[in-house]
Length: 263
Image (cartoon, rainbow, N blue to C red):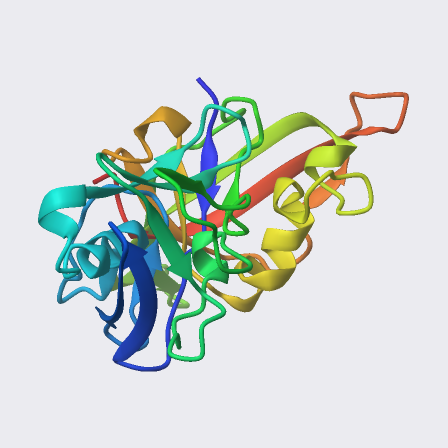
């Protein structure tokens, strides 16, 4: 049961355009987006909520569904994990589809979906590896679980009387470690793709206070079973493993504050 860490995507505007050819018909579609909301590239179908979260793949799915040929072609957007390099797959049940990310009419950025350029016509379109999902390839190691943090103050008078102040219950915290990871899972220098290296996720978002999701089982990315956290300690969390004398294995230790428990 391998874990996964997922970072969200945010957009600046409320709507974007995407030129799409479906069943031979080219149309400019509108992607309805809420600015500054966290959209997660997991394919769980969650609508954008008052809590400011939504499913990034649902944004693309809802956009394609507005095409006049959608009833005939039946487009589908899914996250593919089987290769170990997560990517977005767009299919149609009949005919062909093309996503014209380079078209002058298109204002929606294709990179959050893994598309770097316009696609050719086809019944199935596969994007590149997503930059916002890290798969360590191993289960979570030593894990404190989600523990309550007690915020109290205490003082003792000269006569020995004790006074305790209760400032309330803080959000839960969690400390866990991924042990003995290959250096290709840590350092961009050795990774076949930057998204495979924890270093890229640390620099791009986690170290900046960006929320992230932890899935203890990567197979649940499309269904739930995650906790949302921010990193508490902003010291670099990866270091060479003391248990590995070869010097090529690394540990990643995350000290996290829960933003939302398993959903």
